[in-house]
Amino acid sequence: MRITNTRMSGTTRTRRGLALLIASGAGIGSLLLGTVPAQANDTTKQVSADGRTVVFTTSDSSRNVSGSVEFTVNADGNWQITGTGHNSNLLVRTIHWTCDLTWDAAKVSHSTGKKAVPGKKTRTVSSAAYDPNIQADFADIADRGRADCDIVIG
Image 1 (tube, helix red, strand yellow):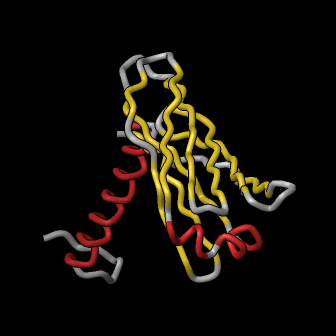
Image 2 (cartoon, helix red, strand yellow):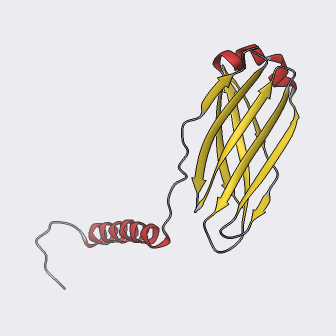
Image 3 (tube, helix red, strand yellow):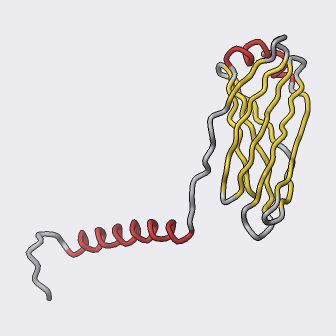
Protein backbone atom coordinates (compact mmCIF):
# COMPACT_ATOMS: atom_id res chain seq x y z
CA MET A 1 0.00 0.00 0.00
CA ARG A 2 1.25 3.43 -0.93
CA ILE A 3 1.34 6.10 1.73
CA THR A 4 0.32 9.61 0.72
CA ASN A 5 0.15 12.82 2.66
CA THR A 6 -2.56 14.50 0.54
CA ARG A 7 -5.35 13.68 3.00
CA MET A 8 -7.57 12.52 0.13
CA SER A 9 -9.09 9.12 -0.19
CA GLY A 10 -8.21 6.97 -3.15
CA THR A 11 -11.75 7.42 -4.53
CA THR A 12 -11.44 11.21 -4.46
CA ARG A 13 -8.07 11.08 -6.22
CA THR A 14 -9.52 8.76 -8.87
CA ARG A 15 -12.53 11.04 -9.51
CA ARG A 16 -10.36 14.14 -9.78
CA GLY A 17 -7.97 12.37 -12.13
CA LEU A 18 -10.85 11.16 -14.30
CA ALA A 19 -12.37 14.66 -14.43
CA LEU A 20 -9.00 16.13 -15.44
CA LEU A 21 -8.57 13.47 -18.12
CA ILE A 22 -12.03 14.17 -19.59
CA ALA A 23 -11.55 17.94 -19.56
CA SER A 24 -8.15 17.81 -21.22
CA GLY A 25 -9.37 15.23 -23.75
CA ALA A 26 -12.28 17.44 -24.74
CA GLY A 27 -9.99 20.44 -25.12
CA ILE A 28 -7.45 18.59 -27.22
CA GLY A 29 -10.18 16.92 -29.27
CA SER A 30 -11.81 20.21 -30.21
CA LEU A 31 -8.40 21.64 -31.11
CA LEU A 32 -7.59 18.70 -33.36
CA LEU A 33 -10.97 18.72 -35.05
CA GLY A 34 -10.87 22.47 -35.52
CA THR A 35 -14.42 22.93 -34.31
CA VAL A 36 -15.33 26.54 -34.41
CA PRO A 37 -18.72 27.95 -33.49
CA ALA A 38 -20.76 29.54 -36.26
CA GLN A 39 -19.93 33.21 -36.62
CA ALA A 40 -22.97 35.30 -37.44
CA ASN A 41 -22.72 39.00 -38.09
CA ASP A 42 -25.24 41.55 -36.89
CA THR A 43 -28.46 41.64 -38.86
CA THR A 44 -29.38 44.95 -40.47
CA LYS A 45 -33.01 45.94 -40.89
CA GLN A 46 -34.30 48.29 -43.55
CA VAL A 47 -37.92 49.38 -43.87
CA SER A 48 -38.92 50.62 -47.33
CA ALA A 49 -39.98 54.23 -47.81
CA ASP A 50 -43.63 53.23 -48.27
CA GLY A 51 -43.50 51.01 -45.17
CA ARG A 52 -44.74 47.92 -47.06
CA THR A 53 -41.48 45.91 -47.08
CA VAL A 54 -38.87 45.06 -44.44
CA VAL A 55 -35.50 43.61 -45.50
CA PHE A 56 -33.14 41.90 -43.06
CA THR A 57 -29.58 41.21 -44.26
CA THR A 58 -26.66 39.42 -42.63
CA SER A 59 -23.83 37.00 -43.28
CA ASP A 60 -22.80 33.82 -41.51
CA SER A 61 -20.20 31.06 -41.64
CA SER A 62 -20.05 27.52 -40.36
CA ARG A 63 -17.56 24.70 -40.98
CA ASN A 64 -15.71 26.54 -43.78
CA VAL A 65 -18.92 27.46 -45.60
CA SER A 66 -19.82 31.15 -45.63
CA GLY A 67 -22.38 33.35 -47.27
CA SER A 68 -24.83 36.19 -47.02
CA VAL A 69 -28.61 36.22 -46.84
CA GLU A 70 -31.47 38.61 -47.45
CA PHE A 71 -34.78 37.93 -45.68
CA THR A 72 -37.65 40.04 -47.03
CA VAL A 73 -41.12 40.29 -45.49
CA ASN A 74 -44.00 42.17 -47.07
CA ALA A 75 -47.17 43.69 -45.66
CA ASP A 76 -49.26 41.23 -47.69
CA GLY A 77 -47.73 38.33 -45.71
CA ASN A 78 -45.36 37.13 -48.41
CA TRP A 79 -41.75 36.46 -47.44
CA GLN A 80 -38.61 35.52 -49.34
CA ILE A 81 -35.17 34.26 -48.30
CA THR A 82 -32.31 34.51 -50.79
CA GLY A 83 -28.88 33.40 -49.65
CA THR A 84 -25.52 32.41 -51.02
CA GLY A 85 -23.10 29.80 -49.79
CA HIS A 86 -19.40 29.57 -50.63
CA ASN A 87 -17.83 26.19 -49.83
CA SER A 88 -14.12 26.49 -48.97
CA ASN A 89 -13.81 22.71 -48.57
CA LEU A 90 -12.80 20.25 -51.27
CA LEU A 91 -15.86 18.04 -50.75
CA VAL A 92 -19.49 18.87 -51.52
CA ARG A 93 -21.48 20.43 -48.65
CA THR A 94 -25.26 20.70 -48.50
CA ILE A 95 -26.51 24.03 -47.18
CA HIS A 96 -29.71 25.85 -46.37
CA TRP A 97 -30.59 29.08 -44.58
CA THR A 98 -32.90 29.32 -41.57
CA CYS A 99 -34.35 32.66 -40.44
CA ASP A 100 -36.13 33.26 -37.14
CA LEU A 101 -38.31 36.37 -37.15
CA THR A 102 -39.32 37.68 -33.72
CA TRP A 103 -41.46 40.58 -32.60
CA ASP A 104 -42.96 41.19 -29.18
CA ALA A 105 -43.68 37.64 -27.88
CA ALA A 106 -44.26 36.15 -31.34
CA LYS A 107 -41.84 34.11 -33.43
CA VAL A 108 -41.92 32.45 -36.85
CA SER A 109 -39.19 30.43 -38.53
CA HIS A 110 -38.69 29.96 -42.25
CA SER A 111 -35.95 28.31 -44.26
CA THR A 112 -34.80 27.67 -47.78
CA GLY A 113 -34.58 24.28 -49.39
CA LYS A 114 -31.29 22.41 -49.26
CA LYS A 115 -28.72 22.81 -52.01
CA ALA A 116 -25.45 21.00 -52.67
CA VAL A 117 -22.43 23.28 -53.02
CA PRO A 118 -19.38 21.68 -54.69
CA GLY A 119 -15.95 22.32 -53.21
CA LYS A 120 -14.49 25.76 -53.90
CA LYS A 121 -17.80 26.95 -55.46
CA THR A 122 -20.61 29.35 -54.59
CA ARG A 123 -24.32 28.65 -55.01
CA THR A 124 -27.52 30.62 -54.44
CA VAL A 125 -30.54 29.16 -52.68
CA SER A 126 -33.95 30.78 -52.14
CA SER A 127 -37.48 30.18 -50.92
CA ALA A 128 -40.65 32.21 -50.82
CA ALA A 129 -44.15 31.71 -49.41
CA TYR A 130 -47.04 33.33 -47.59
CA ASP A 131 -47.35 33.52 -43.78
CA PRO A 132 -50.62 34.83 -42.27
CA ASN A 133 -48.80 35.76 -39.02
CA ILE A 134 -46.58 38.17 -40.91
CA GLN A 135 -49.58 39.76 -42.62
CA ALA A 136 -51.53 40.10 -39.35
CA ASP A 137 -48.67 41.70 -37.38
CA PHE A 138 -46.74 43.48 -40.12
CA ALA A 139 -46.89 46.90 -38.42
CA ASP A 140 -45.30 45.42 -35.29
CA ILE A 141 -42.68 43.61 -37.36
CA ALA A 142 -41.77 46.83 -39.18
CA ASP A 143 -41.52 48.64 -35.86
CA ARG A 144 -39.98 46.08 -33.48
CA GLY A 145 -39.18 43.00 -35.56
CA ARG A 146 -35.80 41.27 -35.47
CA ALA A 147 -34.44 38.45 -37.61
CA ASP A 148 -31.71 35.95 -36.89
CA CYS A 149 -30.57 34.05 -39.98
CA ASP A 150 -28.10 31.17 -39.90
CA ILE A 151 -26.43 29.07 -42.56
CA VAL A 152 -26.94 25.38 -41.83
CA ILE A 153 -24.64 22.66 -43.13
CA GLY A 154 -26.12 19.26 -43.86
